[in-house]
Structure formats: structure tokens, C-alpha cells
Length: 283
Ligand SMILES: Nc1ncnc2c1ncn2[C@@H]1O[C@H](COP(=O)(O)OP(=O)(O)OC[C@H]2O[C@@H]([n+]3cccc(C(=O)O)c3)[C@H](O)[C@@H]2O)[C@@H](O)[C@H]1O
Ligand SMILES: Nc1ncnc2c1ncn2[C@@H]1O[C@H](COP(=O)(O)OP(=O)(O)OP(=O)(O)O)[C@@H](O)[C@H]1O
Ligand SMILES: [Mg+2]
Image (spheres, rainbow, N blue to C red):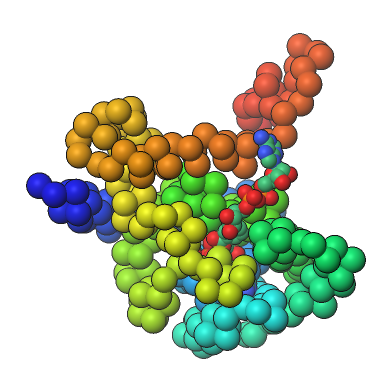
């Protein structure tokens, strides 16, 4: 079997696992929001597939009156992204809330003239997080995360930006599984089929940033993380060494984004080290 045949076959099997997840994710949202004492949810709606899927799940869990998506374009954001986000609102009969983040981003970078596109993009992601958390306090709505398992493992997101949330219904699903889920939820096809993009600068796409496709990433991540194969075993099975190594490098380099800040241990009960289980806070 060629590498592309192996990838297609494994992707098909990954997608099969999504068949029954909708009721599980809807129940997860209901239970966790209730436990937190909130009755509403808030999140950024970009026009991309991940936040669209979260919007559909949230409406299934809470109904349209308790779901608060916010569209937050920067002046260089793709116009079609905003149009796609509005299409989700129309399909779910949700009201439009739009906050243009250009003024505050431009004010800050007016004083930081040499800033790279990456610095600007990370600041935009953190600005959106800051707005979501402010709206959370205003609306008494819990912030939902929209990062999928592929992004979380590869560290493809801004720490304390788009990676920040209270609850994430899709963080254990790979991108190829999100596509299947989106079809099951009847997300508009144009959103499912367009190339994924962080849209932090013009013409950015996830797959050109990675240098490999989501199908390749998901199949190799599944073998490395879920099946717990070593990189050497994955390469022995016929997968390209340079891609396996690049994926491993990203997993390693970005572990800091998947954990709490490290606290210097001085006592016998250090938060994050010895204080980690629900019994520790009396539950
Ligand atoms: N070992 C370590 N332990 C703790 N913190 C560490 C650290 N190494 C760096 N840091 C800190 O983290 C910073 C780097 O991480 P971070 O600021 O998150 O940003 P960074 O990893 O440099 O870049 C974010 C990446 O995610 C992509 N992205 C961002 C936002 C949204 C999306 C999307 O798909 O929508 C994608 C973006 O295109 C870029 O490739 C450093 O500047 C430093 O402050
Ligand atoms: N213009 C925007 N308005 C509102 N939220 C945004 C905007 N851009 C990014 N976000 C938030 O940041 C998250 C991360 O973006 P990301 O690109 O990973 O997801 P997506 O756009 O939903 O899907 P895709 O990865 O397919 O583009 C989005 O899901 C959304 O919550
Ligand atoms: Mg996007």
C-alpha cells in the first residue's frame, strides 16, 4: 500500500469513531455548564469549521437564547470569513454581535513598529480572548474553547489566546474527525470544504504553515499518541520520516501550552504538583 492509500484508509477509520459523539458532547456541555453555575456560553465565531461546529453543538445543548457567539475581525481578516460566520448565525437563528479589534491592535502596534506578523497575530488572538472573557462577565456566560486535538497536540494556537477557555467540547477530536462531525451537524458545505486558516495574516493557511496536510498529521498523531507507537515504528510502517520528525518536534516544543504554569515547589502541598485531584478542593 502506498503512503497516501494508508492515510486515506486510516482517516476513514478515524471518521467512523465520530458517528455517535453528538449526544455525548451535548450532554458534556449541559453538565459542565450547569456544574459551573452558569447558564449560557460565549465564544469567538470566525467563519472557520471549528467554531462553527462549537456553535451547532452549543445551540443543540442550550437553545439559541443562551448561546453568544462573537465575530471579531481585524482589518486584514478575510471578508469571506466574516460572511461565513454570518451564514452560521443565520442558519442557527442567532443574533449578530461583532467587535472590530483593529483599533486596539493598531494603537498598540503603533508604538511597536518592528513587530512581526507572528507577534501581531498572537496579540489578535489574545485580544479576542480578552473580549470573550469580558463578555463572559457581562452575560454570565462560560467561555467555550474551539481548539481541536490536532491543533492542541501540534501547539498550533496562541497560549492564553485562542487556546484559553473554560470548556472545550472538541479538544479530543482530530481535524479530519471535526470535518465528519460538521457534516453530521449540517454545517454549511462551503465552511467544511475551505482550507483551514488562522487568518492572522493575509493568505495564511494551517497546512502551508505546517508543511504537511491535516490528513497526514491526524494519521501520524493517532499512531504516536493514541496507539503509543514510537516515531521509529511509525517510520517503519512506511510514513515519511521528515513529517514524523516535524510532528514530534512540534509536540515536544509546545508542551508548555498544554499545562498550568510551573510553580517552584517549597511546601509539601504545591498547587499543580500535590494539589491536583478533586478531593483536594473538597469535592
Ligand atoms: N517553554 C516555555 N514555557 C512557557 N512559555 C513559553 C515557553 N516557550 C515559549 N513560551 C512563551 O510562549 C510564547 C510563544 O507561544 P505563543 O505566544 O502561544 O505563540 P507561538 O507558538 O509563537 O505562535 C502561535 C502559533 O499558533 C498559530 N495560531 C495562533 C492563533 C490561532 C491559530 C488558529 O489556528 O486559529 C493559530 C500561529 O500561526 C503560530 O504558528 C513565547 O513568546 C513565550 O512567551
Ligand atoms: N475573526 C474572528 N472572530 C471571532 N473569533 C475568531 C476570529 N478568528 C479566530 N477566532 C477564534 O479563534 C479560534 C481559532 O481559530 P481556528 O482558525 O483554529 O478555528 P476556526 O477558524 O474555527 O476553524 P479553521 O481552523 O478551520 O479555520 C476560532 O475557532 C474562533 O473561536
Ligand atoms: Mg480559522
